[in-house]
Length: 195
Image 1 (cartoon, helix red, strand yellow):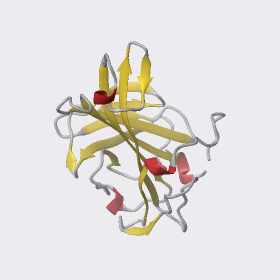
Image 2 (image 1 turned 180 degrees about the horizontal axis):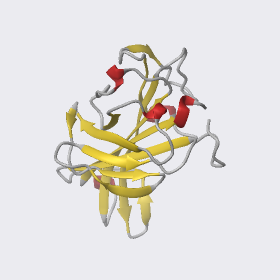
Image 3 (image 1 turned 90 degrees about the horizontal axis):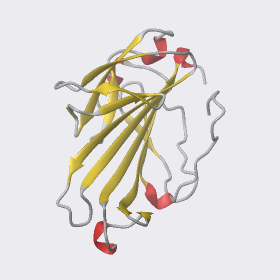
Image 4 (image 1 turned 90 degrees about the vertical axis):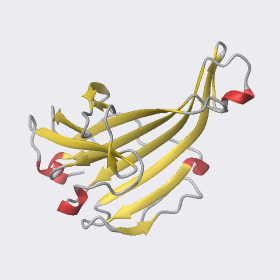
């Protein structure tokens, strides 16, 4: 839920949900969500809610983009395997200033809920628990730069309310079923911790 006027829910196939986890302020997983039906749900008061989805293989052809591997179409132009992580922070603990998963993840250095309009948000992009360079980072859908060799990037908070920061990392594959993996990580939180 948020204060913006966008879509309230996004429909998806339950099979796309790979993982749904609730973390406490100590960074400990305290609950797994039911992912077999729509909508997936987490019970309890999560400091961090995390979901990993994969919509599978996508192949672009001269006739449009199809949700199938490259080896199942004629005249493939490009292809990719898609993974999307979504992380929502509602309560802060210093243990959350480290990666919680092995997926592509945006990790705040300090409490993002305490930021104000105009403050800098310092983030580190990690993949498989390690800093990752070259991830493209966007704020409210607008690219703001790439992570440096240590995975760090600063993003200026430009408004109150819901904050959405996204990182994208592309990794080459062997080209049989797809040319590359595309990992996307979305971090959201609300300034002041209010919904």
